[in-house]
Length: 321
Image 1 (cartoon, helix red, strand yellow):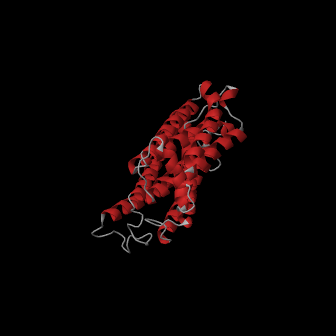
Image 2: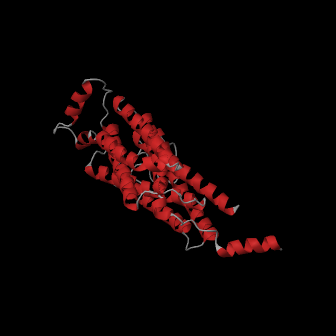
Image 3: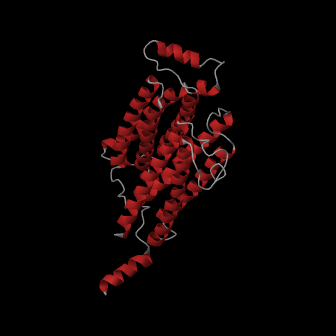
């Protein structure tokens, strides 16, 4: 019962993290990153903003929801320690989740205090955005592994369901690179909006974007669709065999991969409207989690522990009594 409840809580936490991530993208899309000025952790110098503007409400809400990640993360770590013990893999992944939550807060503070928000189009902002996204992926990865391990996953029996550790690492690294390029591209689409382009005019628009006179964010966004397509083919080839063997996470990852490519092409054709960027990001997070858990058996088979010995013995004793 305790393990099942913990697993459900951990999956709730994963879903909450994804919701906060998507809402963070909404802050960027609406240009609300400077809604609290260059103040952190206060908002415009106040603990609770009075008479806030719309952008202030959006940014302050994001800070509150992000702060709750820390509270939920502490519960996750404490519960994992009590149920599984400090030597368990579940506790270690839960503890790493909390570490990456702290890093996430520090990077967010750096963006605000460095004024790398709103209309800032510097290379520094692009670099920090890339670091921010990488940390976000590591955060969701640790949270998802915690939930997965707590659910007592059964290792796949078919050899084809377990890719080699090297190939699994290549697949995940490919997804990280695609995601990072997508984050930088989304920043460029927000700061330098374009008109929807279809048909023969698309090639002319690509050539225009590559002009040396354009901002570097405009030139970089041309490369993301190509990287996404090539990377998707590689990841799909790694997931194909486990999916054919019936591995559920591999099948889910392939489905999300196909949907993500379709939404990405739609994004290009429609000039990346804000709401579609959020859909794109949401599916990307689902793809990342499902691919991670499809590849996880390559390293973590047999890592799921039983509940902590002292806890289990006390439960047995109480039932005997």
